[in-house]
Amino acid sequence: MPDPAIEIENLTKEYPFGFLHLKKRTSLEGLSMQVEMGDVFGFIGPNGAGKSTTIKLLMGLIFPTAGSARILGKPISDVEMHGDIGYLPEQPYFYDYLTAAEVLDYFARFHDLTAADRKDRVDRMLRKVGLETARKIQLRKYSKGMLQRVGLAQAILHDPKVVILDEPMSGLDPVGRREVRDIILELKKDGKTVMFSTHILSDAETLCDRVGVIVGGKLRGVGAPGTLVDMKTLGMEILFELTGTANVPLLSKATRTGDCYRLQVPEEELYAAIEQLRGAGAHILSVSQVKATLEEFFMNLVEADRAQGAAVEVSGQ
Amino acid sequence: MRRAGVVALNTFREAVRDRVLYNLVFFALLMIAASVAVGQISIGIEQTVIVSLGLSAISVIGLLISIFLGVALVSKEMDKRTLYTLLAKPVRRSEFLLGKFAGLVLTLAVNTAAMAMGLLLAMLYVKHSLERSDTVVLVAVYFILLKLALIVALALLFSCFTTPLLAILFTVGLYSAGLYVQELRNLPIEVMSPPMSAFTKWLSYLLPNFENFNVMAMAAHGRVVPGALILQNTLYAVVYCTIVLTAAAAVFSRRNLK
Ligand SMILES: Nc1ncnc2c1ncn2[C@@H]1O[C@H](COP(=O)(O)OP(=O)(O)O)[C@@H](O)[C@H]1O
Ligand SMILES: [Mg+2]
Image 1 (tube, each protein chain N blue to C red):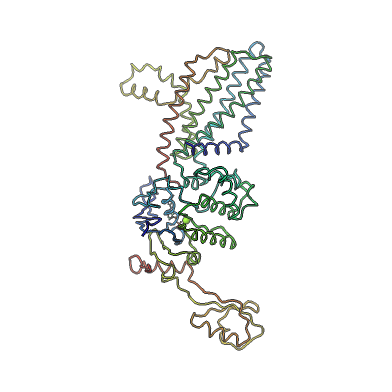
Image 2 (cartoon, rainbow over the protein chains, first blue to last red; image 1 turned 180 degrees about the vertical axis):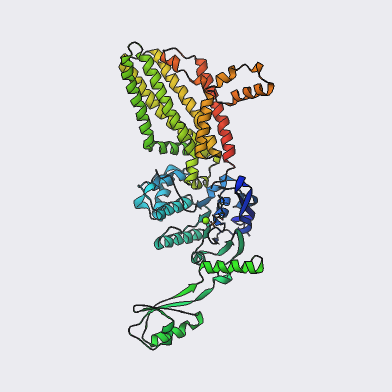
């Protein structure tokens, strides 16, 4: 068994606040977990859960109150190992007087690359994140989504072994999100380890080998996404078209927009419902799964937490 | 070291793309041009007037740049969070600081050189020729640059542990105090109480001593600056900057980013 890519042990971060910084707020409490080599690991939790805090601790941007962590077997205080790590901060921002090509070239200079290699990589990265037409534009004129793309490009520019992304999909349109997903899958194919944080459950579900759930600074469970209990589907949604009125009892439960209907049924009743609708001459447009929203998922966690007075066990295997 | 160099060049590039800087240098050149007009009214002492006014302009503009940009070097990168991605590269915080410092000193060197060129041109215009003794003006400009490097180091240190506004106030305060170090040393410490005299003595060594960097009077009268003073000032600036930057690195290396 090879060493884990990321090992976190009892990592804790307190922020002082209030008068003379006498009070302390715990943003992260005794986090212990591992991310295995070659895994895509999703770090999920609502806003303010402590995801960014954890990632900033891992990158040495802030320092732990207690605990330790290792990446690729090296302690996080060792800056040299950053050569093997890529990092995308939350809402990245760059020198706005530089162009995308310049900022990438600047970052590339911190790695031991020849000038030709640097140029080649910058070109390839700009193409990969879809910014080659905007490469000569100063970053002050970039939109949030474009900056996010620059951030992604600089994170993978030096071919790192471990890539840590803080909310990589935020600020992106659906096409952009799709592209980020593809990039993450490509990294996985190349044998890289990816850890990314998100508050969007479906992103984690479709991409991750394993996820860790964090709420209120505490890890609530780690496991394969399907094994996390509350992430099961709530039912199926059928979108269909029906002209005129037909005598279908199911119709009363559907929401109507013009000739379009939207109907939610339990998973086991899906086929019966479709047959009924087909019989009435409906034209089925789409069928999709309905998942618990993240709020519901976490509300369940928080409520269960309160009820039991202890951490909820949601871990899978 | 190489990585600090990369940071330095980018800091310089940022300054080159900043219009405010050109305006300031342009303003200094304007003052030098104006001093030519004033100098011509005061017949016989043109040289003195032009050199004094010119060096003052270079010094004041340099001070403005070094205090304000010096404080902004680190605090701006923290506020805008451009530091996040940079510190995630294999670069030490001390290397980052050194690079920032070197980048601004390089910027100041180029600006000061441009302003000095303007001053020499003004002198040439008035006197129609430059003599060997006029090199003293260059020495004076060099001393101004050393002084500015010291101020950048101090501004950087303060910005590592306090807000930009306070850092500016501290730097200005320390600079002003540094102008009077000689007076402090000349105080009759024998008549003070022992703790007071010890405090005064320590303070006079702790404060940056800018007295020796001011050779404006010598330059204005075309007197020669002794080589020993050049060496002494250079060494003083190097040692003082090293100590201040080391302190800054010690503070900054422990600092949590926002
Ligand atoms: N610099 C800071 N000072 C004080 N509190 C902070 C600081 N940064 C984060 N926090 C607090 O820590 C908690 C976790 O924040 P964060 O890690 O950013 O959450 P997430 O990324 O999961 O949304 C929040 O309650 C936040 O208010
Ligand atoms: Mg966050």
